[in-house]
Image (cartoon, rainbow, N blue to C red; front, side, top):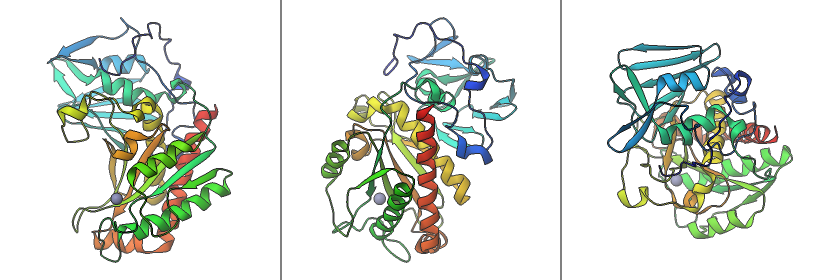
Length: 344
Ligand SMILES: [Zn+2]
């Protein structure tokens, strides 16, 4: 299967301590349990594989066994895998997965077949495993620099908000984020520091020129007057759809950023969980897409949507500098949680 590394034939079973367990309140420590980069997939023969329509799936029972969940409860289309401090929820027919209340968008819907509830093998290797076992992600060099990308700018105002435009809020939040990160001892490279518009290729160039770095692009969302909440995007793995969208051509392609799939989703998890916890934000999920920036970067990277400026309620919050400071602090804390995970 695309992206699956069949070199990994022998897979030691995870120990309970390696599976990071946390409640939503503990989501800040999401990745504090271990390093995170590149588990290749389950050991051959260790899983029951079910092929439906040419796609390989594993069973919820297999996930329970491999990750040593204490119990599996099924109620109609819903499944809950439980350990004392970890609950993973799935629903047949849905692409949503909740881990301790944090929403993730799977690449393929969960299916049921007889007594089995099925999760695609690519979601196991590209999402569930790096999130549950960050210590199994192959260790890359520890990053010392964060490339902060304030979305839009110059002639590109971005989304038009109720009280202001996206380009202004992204720049201010990013400058605050830069200060927060520098205060924590990290170097920061900005793709812009004023009202200018670096092109998307120029932003990728800046990211790829920064050694030992990660990339965070800061945006605010548009979606009508009532849409609310935060979203965090990681690059869609090769062979999968963008969240809720199909594109046969690009879905099949592998991009530069796909070399960092496991780090991308781990970074997204850490930052998203931190935003939910610190801001009590509405959770729109950790999503997948193929944004130009995420396709081209060689470093781990994410794109954050810090709320809807088309909503009078959310834009009023975002317009307040105190909220932007809290948002910047939440993103910085998430980055530090991710970094701690890499150092273990
Ligand atoms: Zn934007």
